[in-house]
Length: 392
Image (cartoon, one colour):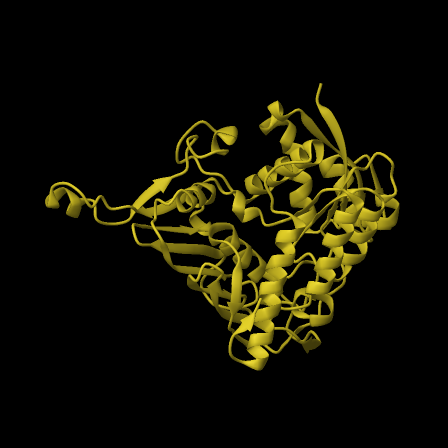
């Protein structure tokens, strides 16, 4: 019989909804893992969102105060999907209450907050996880194996970027993501954690960084509380407020291995919708991946032996498509090139965390990975202010 794990979701914005859908899908898609998530309680201060969560996802009950959620005896996992400013208070309290903690990124607004959460989880002897969900794309997992197994040879260059135009419209409302007090850093806190974590996942620790940052849109329409997200557009004539964190960050890095690369992020660039991707170059080959075409991987592995004409014919990138050969694609469908999507990555993420909760082991990303990503962002912030290279 499957073990039933009670889950509380704190914060029912679009990310809280994504987590709720993910846990509902685990018993079907990961039916052989012997674990079932029960949506025990949702916590959100907005009554309409609480009511919608119960109606849509089947939460057993809904509360306004997150403290009432983490105190429930049938709750073993607390998912923290609130605005950034609340992460530390909720996550630390949940860990001290003996609950396993899954926190959306950035886990803390600063390294200090992030470390405090990781420390609370470690001292409580519970599991901690973070929403670096792009790691779970089957073709990313395959790329990581190619790198780890040495198929690319010695790695020489790394390039990664996360370009999103959600802030490119000057009328996009001044959500908490654009305010340093509420969010912490701008793209260094919002997008760079994904980029830094992916870089570490593929190539190992980052030793030092340099950086340039810029804020292009300095004022935005003030939001109406409880209405919309950071994708919502303000209206002409709405009062405005100042943007207090950065829109762009370009971060040259050096890995502990000596490999150099560039991590690039922007929320105001015009054109890319959600262009998160990476390129890894080695002495024997290369791979390229991007989230907008997440079910594909470009691979360059030329055969240096044999007839020169045959070598020349194969001397270029080959486009591979995700298939049941690239786990866990086969859990979602049995056909090659029948692609997975964003919510599928959240489902894989939820299943992996449930497994760690029940067995105590399994792959990350963990809250220690979140601390490492936060240190990269903080070092980049220092480098942008002080100049030169900064140690991570």
